[in-house]
Image 1 (tube, rainbow, N blue to C red):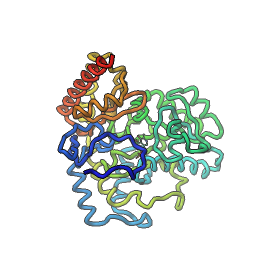
Image 2: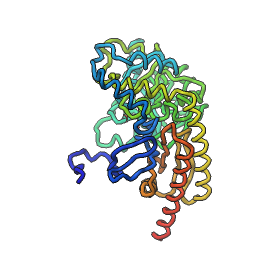
Image 3: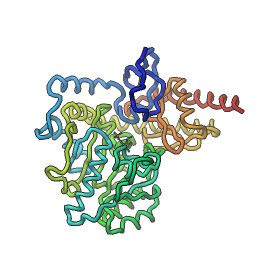
Image 4: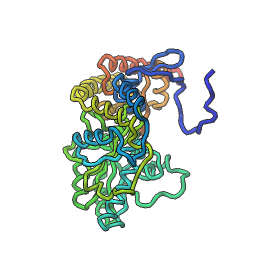
Length: 400
Ligand code: PLP
């Protein structure tokens, strides 16, 4: 019999599957039942489960060196930082163990930046409704989602929340003498697959330049090829000053990074920040292997090809099930639908049919397959979704 979960904090609403192993797009439970996994650790296993190239990199590094402190130069860190900078706007990188820690670093960097330029009063970080930046005290405060703040005592000072995409409100907030930075996901994941138009991203860049704010893009979910370009900001032809990355950066191994321009990182001097495990040799080995694959043009081509197919098919489902699907949303393989019936019920029915999909705010379901998913696998997912919506319709009829 499987052990009970009585001794775990009850903070997760877990799917009732005893997962055992994964291979590519498939996840298997203890009984051997296979699921088509379009969750992939919520957009984390960019190359699918147990990608051989990552397994090899991890095994090889595990036999050499697991851990040394950051008081030494860690194998792979210089190289991965160089690659990330080569393929982005950034000049500097700080490695972390998670997305939240990357956000924490970006928020601390912001305050240090202004303080080191003689303006310590500039502390306000402007964020947007529907945002998700992680679960540390600062990250939940930055995102401002009441459900994640409730009961945790006083809010940290210096965080302002505005309606997503409200450019007039941002203009006013950015002009304040205490404004320090704007933080935004170019495409919201948890917030319900909302894609901020390029014109708004450009507008944010202009405001930051005008008033001397740092522009922080949280690309933890939408970066690393997920939208069909390596970074989602590339669609807007602008660049941030700071960017947070995690999830697919390690292909499933815990790793995050805060990327910044030389100027934005200028306050982060010796002693200002640190981490015991951030940038450890195992994470760097896997990160290098994952980045090597994900930055290949063929992989990005695949994301664009399969996501175009998925989108077209989801539009077809919407036409066939107008009573179930309100809208097809997202960008690239950060995609999904806003639903009429409760998204949790649809996720459960899909699971019964052998398809795993993720939820999202605004009653969305997210389809987050690995970036190397094939069109045949996407077709299989659409078939299972169709079966799911038929079953949902039947259930609704029975309930009437
Ligand atoms: N930022 C975004 C946009 C995310 O999607 C997430 C995780 O879902 C985070 C931050 C937090 O990352 P982590 O869960 O690795 O701490």
